[in-house]
Image 1 (tube, rainbow, N blue to C red):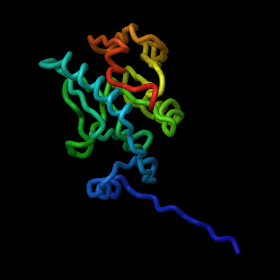
Image 2 (image 1 turned 90 degrees about the horizontal axis):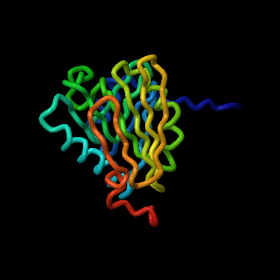
Image 3 (image 1 turned 180 degrees about the horizontal axis):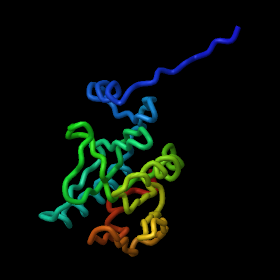
Image 4 (image 1 turned 45 degrees about the vertical axis):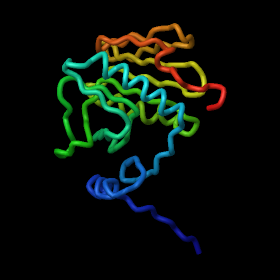
Length: 193
């Protein structure tokens, strides 16, 4: 006899109800709920550094900057996820009138871990590219000095810039903001990730 194991598919509403009561974060991918892995000190420092510099640089301007606890909903991919840093021009568009879930980032920053590296550069980036407002994507490696910067052109193509030196400057295209890699990696211990 063959036993078939079926995993339960959840609706977005069921996921949000469960997630509100959950102690840890979960992604929602086309009806499946997937536990997110824990972060590291390096991950936290990198995300925090980028967020702090961006938030300070854009104070009193028409942008909202969010860090890891605000969820993103992508309807075309049926995905709820928690990007490390998001930038939204003007006002956020919230999902189902929830103040913890947005739909319209123009910039997303993800700090890569060994368990999420392929997903962040693959399926997740595919989903992000379906967001009409999305213009820039930064992938920051937490184990070595390395940043990938994807920029959407006027023609709809994605260009890649790579940075590997601490003195290099990441110059965002969709917002007036520059940051040196040494500011992104400040306090990060690459010898003991």
